[in-house]
Length: 471
Image (cartoon, rainbow, N blue to C red):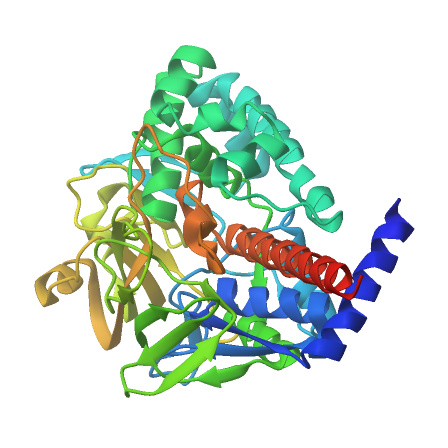
């Protein structure tokens, strides 16, 4: 059956080359979602497709770096990748890039409640293990098993996509991984972990809350799926890309041979069987397919007007503002009395939602170089000079990056569509299940497969019509 399908696709491709030399696809957004989709589309259609990527800002999107006063680059956006993220791992291997494991200059974690630390990791492995068991009990072991079991189910998506299966909605995609996953979207991680899994209260209010504060700027009221994805990123099996994670995006753009158009799309006009895009520079171009690789959010920074659409396209929720502040200076440990005399490095995560920062980390440059005193602070709002001075002294440089980072998650979460209109697709629908680099790649692959399915079914229908007319 597999070989029969391959022959059918080959035959349809041959027919396509006879009746139309190529077709055009526009991708709106030059981040990991947009460029990985271009890469997958190029794999599927080879030279049959022309790809344009519209990106009015920097290529990389939320994967970005800044150069500090010491001359080194530091990650400001998506910083870490899990060892079980197959697409990101494959990209690094196939595109000639290298992994680096040292993302932070420290291994210890401190959970700060606004006044003091509820928990601080010890640099001695045995002592630290005993401290964790003493505070969180056997719940910590059961949580690790729960997350690993979830990841085992999650990984089914790779086999499904390798076999060419595509899904119209997030509910369909999650159900294909495991039918229970849809239920995860309809209960908060707090309720699921306490009432269904019976994890300890301290584990939920401290460790789970900390993971959500640092990864998503939110609390345990988010749905269980994103909460569990967040906890998967707390097990230490993390890495990043040497030279910066944006290098993956740059290499994907190069490999896909997509044409980069450094402009914003401000209007999309639907024609009979195509779409016309108009940019902020008043340029026009027409495409057979259009792919959104950016949020369709209520508070998106560059709004897009839709014309001649059969139904109004509803904006999907709001995205969270996240501010990444890079500081070259010395942290005032006296602000945290418990570690005032401790010279060992530490990442501080605030589990108090009234605190003005989410986390403070001593970070390393993307090329494994850089000053010992470069810190990254995540916050919900831009930090004032007084707030920066409250935390640091001997400051020589400050850089601020402010962006819409991820959805605001709530319960219940409705199913979102990847196929929002005929020939119009939305990669970022997947972010409402969880936002991560790997999730964007999975959404991108799904959209590429949806386009493949539509394209060849359309060609088969046209071939049948021509055959009928000839008879």
